[in-house]
Structure formats: structure tokens, C-alpha cells
Length: 260
Image (tube, rainbow, N blue to C red):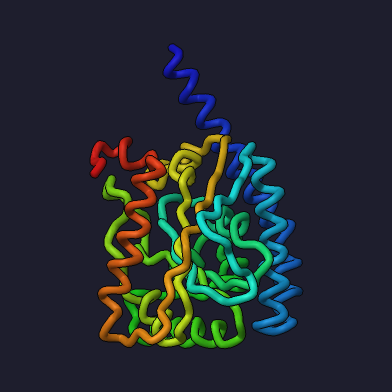
């Protein structure tokens, strides 16, 4: 009986979270559309300010509180290639809560643009990539290069999709590291420690209130590196993030029964 009551409560809370999310998007939509007329740089920066305000309000509705943990000082005056562990549907609002005081653009999967309502805002805010289309991939790379040259950071999930392996991380794609080397932009790894607990990637109705923490690890410099160094750089970032996730006892490692 208790299990049934918990399931019903969980379902109702998740439904409430989904409805509040949709209502917030309806409010944001006209603001985002108007902002988009101000151009890729100015208009895009306004859109991200709007999205940050949205995340603040959304977290209140969801009963979540956020905290950043800085393992080393974070210099907001310089651009970074931010990389993060992709573990939940709420990674985007967590990004908006985490990275403040500097301009960013998020690289996202093209298929997310098909989500009703959300997709309209997503197309205005994200750099979209279709990994199955070589031309689209090349276009997204050029966009990221453009923004980095404008002193705007880019945010990339190097795993490409949700980590469902039960390990701290799944295998990384090359893109983030190629871009970092080509633009000589340092990599800043981020860890989303509680995203899995707030909303599991394999259960859309598992939303729960609670804490949200982002760990800012020390940036990894790429100055002087060439494309020949890309595999070593990728492994260094992977190992750094994996070690930290184990050190912080990331919950999905235990829950999947595959702790390393």
C-alpha cells in the first residue's frame, strides 16, 4: 500500500512539474521570439538571460535549490569550452543555473527541436547538431568557432547522449576537443552531481524536489596543442571527470550496480 501511495505521489508531482514547465514555456515564447530579432549575438545573449530567469523560477516551482562548487577559481572574463556529464532531462535548466556572469551557447541534439513548444525556443537558443548528417555537423562546428571568436563560451555534452551505462561516464566524442584545440580555448569540465536523482533519464515521471550541485573543476589548458594531441586531451578530460564523479560518489554509479 505504501509503495502504491509513493508511486501515485511521484506521478502527480512529476505531472505537476511537467505542467508548470509547459506554462513557463508559454510565457517565455513571445519574449524569446522578440529577442531573436536583435541578431545572433545581442539577441542570443538576451535569450540566454531570459532562460536563466526561467531556470530560477522553474527551480522554485520544482522545489529544487542549486549550489555551485568551485574546486578552483573560475575566471568569467575568458571563454571556455564547457563540458558536462549528460545524465538527465533537466541538464539544460541546470546549465542555466550554473553558468552565470558570462555569455554562452549550448550545443544540443537536433531531434530536441521536434518537442512541441520547447522546440521553438530551443531552435532560437541552441546550436543544433545532427550527428547523422555530415553537412549539419560541419555547420554546427562553424557556429561554435564563430561564437568562441566573439568571446562567447560554448557548452557541449561530450558523451553525446544520456549516460545509461551505469558507469561514471560513457565514451566521449571528439568534437569538443577538436574545437578547443582549433581555437586554443581551455576546457572547463562541469559535474552535475544530482541531476540523476532529480530526474532519471529512463523515467520521465521520476521528478523529485531536492538539491542540485554543479562542480566546476579546474580548467584544462590546450595552448600549444595540435590535432595530434586530441586523443590525449580527450582521455585527460575523461579521466579527470571520472575520478571526480567517483570521489563525489555520484549516485547513478551505485544505483546501476556498476561502481568502479
